Amino acid sequence: MRDFSTDHRWLSINTATVRKQADLIGIIEACARAGIRAIDPWRDQVQAVGLQRVARQLGDAGVTLSGYCRGGFFTATDAAGLQAALEDNRRAIDEAKALGSPCVVLVVGSLPGALSGQPASKDIALARRQVTDGIAATLEYARKAGRRSPSSRCIPCRRRTVPASTRWSRRSIFATRSIQGRTGMLGVALDAYHVWWDPKLEAQIARAGRERLLAYHVCDWLVPTRDLLNDRGMMGDGIVELRKLRGWVESAGYNGPVEVEIFSEHWWSQPIDRVLAVCIERFRSIV
Amino acid sequence: MRDFSTDHRWLSINTATVRKQADLIGIIEACARAGIRAIDPWRDQVQAVGLQRVARQLGDAGVTLSGYCRGGFFTATDAAGLQAALEDNRRAIDEAKALGSPCVVLVVGSLPGALSGQPASKDIALARRQVTDGIAATLEYARKAGRRSPSSRCIPCRRRTVPASTRWSRRSIFATRSIQGRTGMLGVALDAYHVWWDPKLEAQIARAGRERLLAYHVCDWLVPTRDLLNDRGMMGDGIVELRKLRGWVESAGYNGPVEVEIFSEHWWSQPIDRVLAVCIERFRSIV
Image (cartoon, rainbow over all chains, first blue to last red; front, side, top):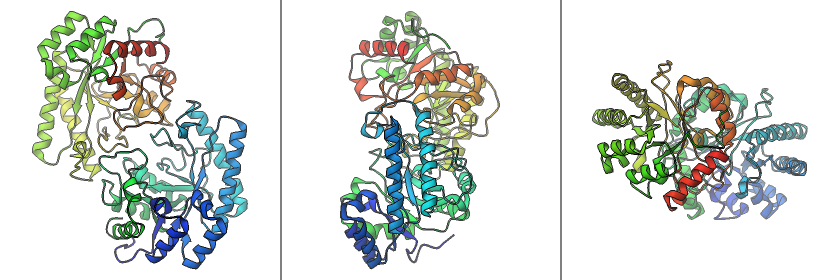
């Protein structure tokens, strides 16, 4: 197991963690100041300041991407919606390539309309089939683009790439049973926040293995949790056994960046340099 | 599949659904007025009015129990705490017997202290072992008491009685891998609210089978869900495919009561007779 106690070269910051404090240029600058060498930016943040400008800023600052958030949201109520989702995912892959990201993180989508609070259907099996088809089509495009992507995010890592979902209504997330080959192109972005409770987690991480573990995200589960989306905790403030989890992930062969992704009204209200300093300290002592 | 459209003889009301409108005597009276023949009361409601009085009232009203909530909370930080939990579970079984309940519903417990927001440990594996031991000890007592109990509640029905947990921090719920025999004494209280999302639900219900399916609870998952505990929906107001789920449950051989359990600030604010009338209407049209 790698020793994180003396440096943070393996730390990546998912830029949602400080999204309310600065635009992406400001976030890259702050990360460079703190000696953070990798980020995982969100598409809306890139669009807000411009792709070329982000690419230049990354180069100037010596910051690389550990991932690119996000593709996905493949579900829709009609063919036009499904097609639009595929086109959007192709753009995500093109952007990831332009920014040098090794993978695109997918949040695959829930019941169509659920995100806006108006689910158009209860047919969860249909939604899963749409996700399967969407990932397959996107994977084909990614293959041609030469990206090692997409990786499916937040999957509880059950039976490799088998469908699973969070219990959340707004962002239930599924993966796909039909794409099981070790292609080296499709894998799991294991997020401690989503899987820490799973009694079979150790075995499932081992089964995913080095070839499918493409990213590892950390934060903490607070007790009590006050909001379903935006009350994630800083590592060490909750009940997740993060050191044990990283041990399992590294035993399975993963040796890439460990990405901090915290959606939290509390941490969004803090100065960016302070948030990054706490991330570094907790990365070294807790993760 | 049973036809529920013309009567509600299989409806049971979990009394938490109307806990803020009346005491248990008032709830039993309201159920009797509405032609509801079964309830699943909570221990604190029984204690508030007295066990003997409840037993008499049930007899007078012709209302029976479909279950008794709740035993469980087996986890603790020390031996005294573990022992106290076992003793409390024995009392729950004695009360269930006195009230003629066919089973005791277990909410098995989370990390010790988590319920009060102060988890004393992060050792989820230890908590699961405590739950296993607690169920085993309680099962032994229940066997002697002649109760067909306890049933473990809220288990996502995975691999029969294999451990699973909700993702909630406050009330993560585990079952037990070590007690797998078809004893007829230990089973699953399948709660649609906890398991509706599971991609493997149909197969897992089938594997649980008639001998382990001891109760079936329904409500609905609202989009959006505003509170982790107390924003459950009335059947039909959310996204759960309830008719499909009951089909799976009945195909597995379950033909007992279907219990409505809704923790909801909204429904707690409505008049009890209205809530029960809506439960009946939705039971007939949606469940």
